[in-house]
Length: 546
Image (cartoon, rainbow, N blue to C red; front, side, top):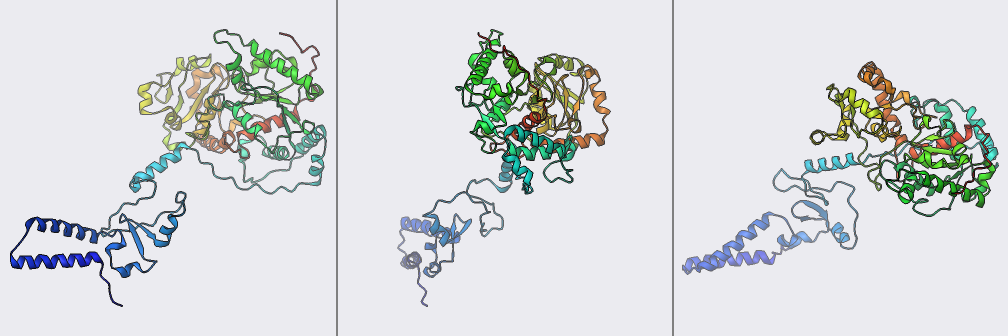
């Protein structure tokens, strides 16, 4: 085969021959010589740097499998390049092929960034820390529905509940469960059987009545976000929600106390009675429009409220206060409103980003990187926090106790970094008994120390809080360090490990997962419905007029 020379190479040879002839005749045009020298120098550089096949012989472009070089680094096949002209590709999921230049040292470059490899790894690692990555849980063991369970599906709601209660009492022993960690539960066998029956049987009817923003409009961020996220996920659920109220075991009243406060409360009035009057009139409307409230006097109805004022919105309606299942963050026994065994203690979760509820949580330090014995920083409202600071602020280097975290301290170590660097995170009550610090401590794998008398802990129907937390009576605040140091290291290590294992039960996800906080709240409501005293309080004169 005859080798064909490229036009550029022919031009170079002719130019060089002309230059030589000119030198022989000694008639040199220096301007042309300078220009020609510049062109030749540029061409030589390009010939040593592969860019496009025009700089190579024609025969090299005949084979479709020969490589094309872009910017001297990325090696692609001609077929891929031709496809790229007509297709729009998503971001690459595999590592791009990297071609080395003449030098053995090179930097990897991908399509999204020109950062060197080390810097890009750091950036990617930082992004991973921002969002807690939840791995897909192992597939649940396939449950074979028994003949008795199939019959229960066709039973009327009241009889189906009686069947479920009996089945839970006869729950088979669970050994070596792959989905749940037995030490953090009071009785894993009962919980597993109850949860499975909830998935199989439970149907919830959501009342469609009520106008936004108080009804059907969840508030999804801030410290009261639990009520909003439950509303959002409940109203979009297809597994548990039924459109036929005759098939329902539970009736949900979807109002937000946070939205109620914004819509009705008059700032500076110090009067929250109009909120409870509004809810009283709403329940009266439901009892007139539908037969379901009067059938049980509200004992199979429930509400979910995380705002501090949640318990007080029921005061103007005696049956609502005495019979209805109330899922409350403010689960305070001293008020006489919350009743253990009927009502549900709701975890108070602080959501900073409603679009990404798992952002900036998780990934706590290992035990060896937790030099601080105990940490607290926060506002000084309520009766407990001033006492905590009185006894421990600036008193002990191992006890990092502050009011609001000082700026000079926060510049060196943020609030979250303090939590990640502490063995115990103190969770004293504020105005009310609950605190978002309890769940924050769990998120950052710090053992929570709860200081709030008369507080019913979240999911205490099924979770054993002594396995992963410490409860200190308010009167023992002066002995706080002594109490913590008396805990053997072996027990602390077990509690800290258990905190990691219980974390999954306190996480909100845009798409709910089995055993997450949404399902745990719903299960506690279901569990208490089955086990509450079925005799309800009938108060015939519950309707009042404002």
